[in-house]
Length: 177
Image 1 (tube, rainbow, N blue to C red):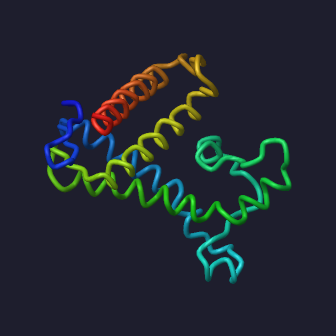
Image 2 (cartoon, rainbow, N blue to C red):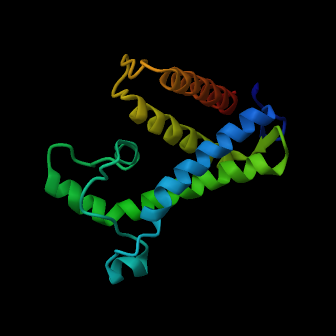
């Protein structure tokens, strides 16, 4: 990967190998797939459906989905349930849309990616969602946690987690520069 840089016209450019592009596109597609059922859930109050809001009353049992769509009020399950019923569907829809932007920008040109400001924001959100998902799978709860390291797969996920942090930092540096 060549780090992100900003062009004179304000676009952000980066170079990825074919493997790197495929990894990011696949991970973004997994995020979209994991949340698309929630985003398009048919179990929505008809009034909520008219205005594009809704969600389930309980947090998802999958730790990765729970990390992406967390309780709003950790100490008040009733308020969290009410908030989730009003916002979960639209939040999941935005996360799916962001992931699709990442996939679409990677498909435009093999290896060379150019982003405008809105696409860069979608990338930041999706990279964060991917890292949160990996952290949940590894059991990383807070800064300083190592999470699982007991298998080759866990070590590979740690390497991927760290590389995605580098990609994110590179994008943030380019945005600020």
